[in-house]
Image (tube, rainbow, N blue to C red; front, side, top):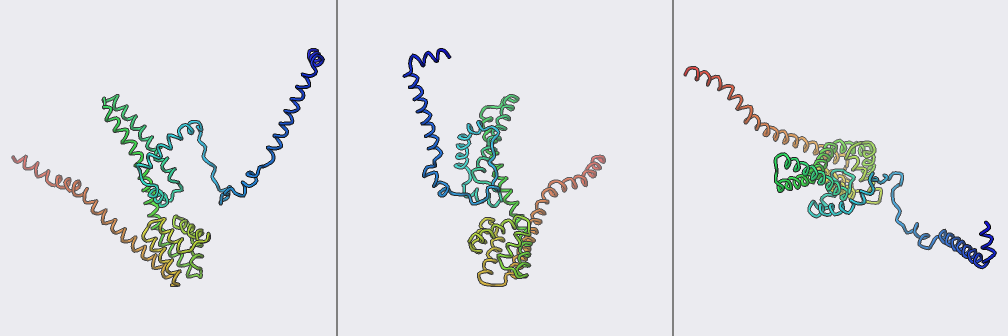
Length: 319
């Protein structure tokens, strides 16, 4: 304290300069704070020019966060390069998009590519482990190990592709099984006095299944401003099923021309049931032909052996 008093007494000009500098710094801070709180023209116009999401934020899913964010950031460029490589040598983007829609998966093409890359990496790791074990146990060559790793990585890609195709086929079978019932429900609703759009809306709200979900999409498209014919055509394009395309076309033609819709729907349901019955008979015929293979090559030789073996033993004893 004594030293501070002596400094003030000996050099009052220095102390005044320091106080002035502190006051100027404080004034600059106050001005900067006031200017920071004042919005600029761009900030005031941004809420009106920014594109707002159409859905509710309450229904949005929170983005999945990686438990290892640093590792995810380090591997992101490698993942992007691998996705581009798979896209260059794999199926086209349009083909994958159609198959995803037919499989009913709420997944983008980029996410599917990333899944394929992960499965390929897992397959390559498994192939590398198998190659190391074989090299240590049996002395397998390095070329065979490389071939094993490449084959395991390709198997990972094929597994992802085959799983998507299997899901698409399973969903198509479900749609075909639900089509006759949904057609009869629509016919009942139309016969009760509902219009075409009202019947579709009622069935989409009361029924549960894959086809009712697709009908709900049709109703949403119509209520968004599209025509019923265009929405039904989009339904046929999404599913890719010929009976469902005929069903959509029959409804569109009946609505456009004013023909009795209930009769058309009942006829469509009957046609789909007949087609399913024919397909079931064909599948049964194919199964019968396939069953001939074990009967001819396994059961029949054993039966002949049991029939001939005692006679051979008797001939040998006689000799």
